[in-house]
Image 1 (cartoon, one colour):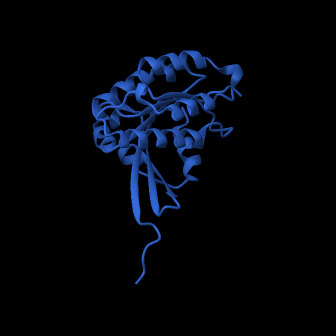
Image 2 (tube, helix red, strand yellow):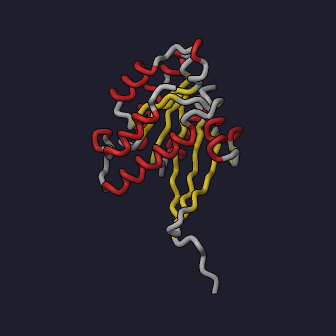
Image 3 (cartoon, one colour):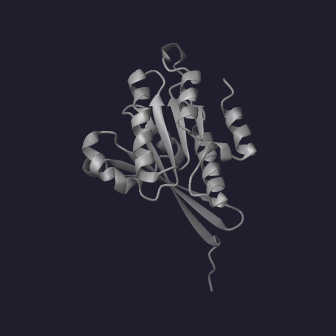
Length: 203
C-alpha cells in the first residue's frame, strides 16, 4: 500500500492589492517562479501558486491572488477576498498617486475581512533618485493603520521579495496559533519584530 510522503496539506490564501503598475504581478511571479492561472480579462484576478514541502511531512500550498485595481471589477472583490489569511498592499515609491491608494485598499480589506495580518510594501526602491515616498513616511502610515509591518522592496533587484512572503507566512502562522479573532501588531512575537527590523536595515 502506498502512503503519501506528505501527511498533511495546508492551504494559505494571500491577497496582493494596490495601484496599477506597482509591480504586483512581477512580485508574485518571482516568488512562485511564474506559475499562474490568469482570469484577468473576464474577472480581474491572477492566481499564483507555490508549494512548500516540509521535513515533518507537511505540505503548505500558497495561493497568491492578485486583484486588478480597476473599479469595474469591484463586484467580484468580496468573493476574491473570502478565505484570505493575509494581505500585501503594494505601492510604487516613485509615485505619490500610487501611495495615496493605500488607504482605499486598507479600508476595502477591513470592510471585507476585518482585522487580519497585512504588510505594506513599497516597491521600486532601486530607483533611489526618483523616490518620492520616503521610508519614514511609509512606516508612519503603516503604524497608524496597524499594518503588521512596512518593507522596502525591489522586484527588479530581488530585494525583500521572498523575505516578504516568509515574513507574512510567519505572522499568519503565529496569528492562527494564537486563536485570537483579531490581529493587532502589538501581539507580534518578539522574534518576528526582530526579523522586521533586520529586513528594514537600509541597503
